[in-house]
Image 1 (cartoon, rainbow, N blue to C red):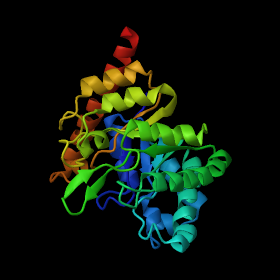
Image 2 (image 1 turned 120 degrees about the vertical axis):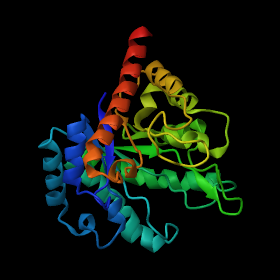
Image 3 (image 1 turned 90 degrees about the horizontal axis):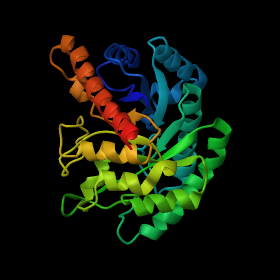
Image 4 (image 1 turned 180 degrees about the horizontal axis):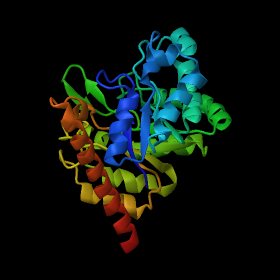
Length: 300
């Protein structure tokens, strides 16, 4: 199991090469490269030659002993419900993210399900739209040899100012999505931190066991206080990581342990010389989680 860290090329503090230096020095194995810059028409990622850009990123990672195992498709577009904009911008750039994933060497590209409408009352409409959306991606997945990791989501109630249910926020619905699509290229990416945010009784470990070995192939690993999507390091929130690692062992999870923590924890250290120490703490916690999973697999 590889220890993977999320990296954004637009972090505002370090170039991706400098970020790779930190991760390699701390002992990470690989990178989850964020492709959200494809949202912006004037970003380097959008304007550059795709093959050349990906080759430069991949070489920078490989030269430091890192691989790129996972990516994240862009998700901060505007006008999701504008059909013309969807067809001319959003869908093509989602496809481009699959191409870039292949060029980077990634096995899985995480793609958010469509969730631009209020969830309650629109469940079946969003299911239909998502089956069409993900179904259209399958031929490109086959062409590029990249799996799509469908992620469990959450919404904020604008009137009550609290987090509520959203697309694939239950194991049952995410299972329905994957099983209906019925493709080896469509798998689950479980965002562990998202599970407990919508005031439900089930926990990440329940979600993991329900998905099982064959569906769950990727993770976003981070912690929170069950009230905000804080994306903090494991053990810095309220999630029970002993139960999470037990569930991952029980299903014989064979993907990577991929952080999606707030990189500001690492990059906003006032003393830059402390950044390697922060990166090492992150890596050590990740290694501990991996060791717990592997130990529990051996004891099963």
